[in-house]
Every structure is written in structure tokens, then in C-alpha cells.
Image (cartoon, rainbow, N blue to C red; front, side):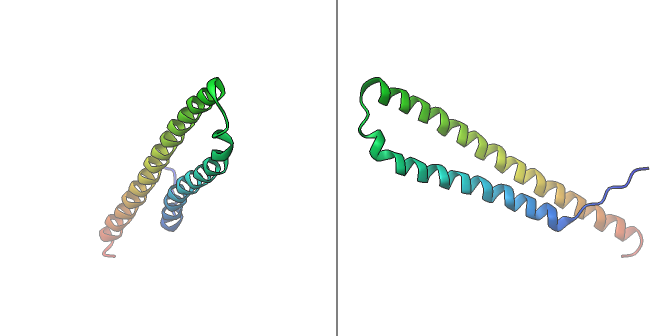
Amino acid sequence: MGEIKVDFNQLGQLADDLNSTATKVQGQLDELEQMLKPLIATWEGSAQEAYHQAQNEWDQSAERMREITAKMGAAVNVARESYQQGEQRNAGLFGG
């Protein structure tokens, strides 16, 4: 029979890290967009159109990344809670 060793604190930290990473990435993307605004404002015609289309695709990709990262963080939290409950049940079998 195999052995599984789980560190509840590390799982909690992983969930927190996933959530904070998504927030940091969004902050950096927002900062980059603000830096580019003056340059983008000078573009006209097809260059401006192409940029806005690409920006829309990047925004959609960033949103998908945030959603996936949030789901991963939630899944890690569920796993941590399940392992903790299992440990508590097992300890209860021995009167602990």
C-alpha cells in the first residue's frame, strides 16, 4: 500500500499563491496598457484596428487565465479540506 503525505500549510499557501499570482499578472497587464495608451492614441487606420483586435484577444486570454487560476486555487483548497477531514476522521478512530 502506498503512502500519501500532505502538508496542509503548503496546500493553503499554494492556493494563496495561485490567487495572488493572477492578481499580480492582471496588475502588470493594466500597468502595461496605461504605459502604451499615449502611443496607441497616435495610431490610425489599420494599425489601430489591428492593435485593438489583438488587445481584445489578449484581454480574453488573460480573463481565461484568471478563471483557470481561480479554479485551481479553489480545487487546492477543497483537496486540503478533504485531507484535513480525512485525518480528523482517522484520528477519531483511535480516540484522538
